[in-house]
Image (cartoon, rainbow, N blue to C red; front, side):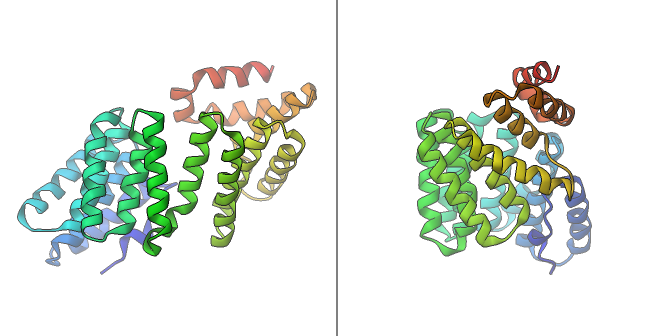
Length: 285
């Protein structure tokens, strides 16, 4: 059978959905209810990443039917995770929390260590209280460090904990976490995630007042991206912020303009960080 989890492209969920639907059609008579149920959880996830939450829930309802017919613990854990993700992403984080807790407990019970960390890391996102979010992130980190099957999560957990520490004003601790994330990403060798990790290190350096170091990293990322797919709006924004902090306002304008051109097309940022985008536009003038 096709190992569909290896076919995920999180940057192109619509493409992933179509691939998974084709596999579902090919596999519908294979008699493996667990395989089919897990596949439909991932179809739902791809739909959720596109903002198609109603379609995602319809797909998950199909999984629920299969779960009612057989004992499928791994598929059940994945169902809980994806139903929870749909709720969280559609603006109902409080309703997602019990599902993630159930997934956490069930995954541990059945030694599904990778999915246990997934559930704990989602609780580190969905919980309303910052201290509770941090507690779940630290619990996820401890679990991942002690279960080799789940260690792929370490980079993401270092990153998530780092941002929680930034939010709490704990910049030195955040810098340490982002440095761990960068070292982990460099070990794995994925250039895209390495670049993101470097960006995070540079941003917290700027917030710590170490602007020269931050600008050096962000500029390096900028010119490397120019030789490839082009810089991101977030990269341009950070270069502009560094230049502005350093008193190089005229140079900053150009990067703020580039940042606005790119970030104004980011639907999530437009919806959730309108004030930030308005500031970038103003500084681009």
